[in-house]
Image (cartoon, rainbow, N blue to C red; front, side):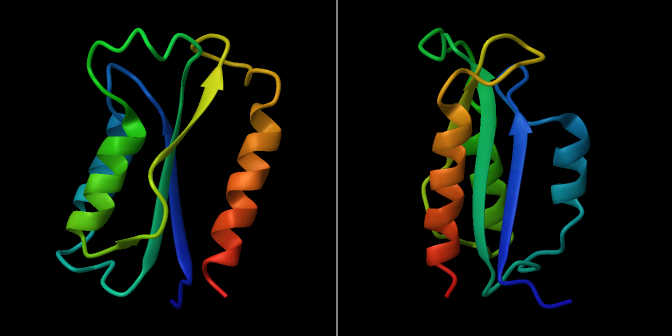
Length: 107
């Protein structure tokens, strides 16, 4: 399957991505993303300064890079009101702008 860009995202839970997503990424063979453009994002609580462990986007980006992916933008975060959302005001627009930037990097 031909892929121009792989975007992976997860809510941050205890400083990491969802366990199921980690299992999926761990199953990708070594260099399985070689020559593939990749990007990572997470959703995190609006009190992002209250950082205890870390963030999912950072962990995801590292996983994608260790599988050979070419990270084309720094990991991004979108803020939520609480664990189950919703996104804070203005975050949908920020996410759309981020997606447009990504699209511009694959053409």
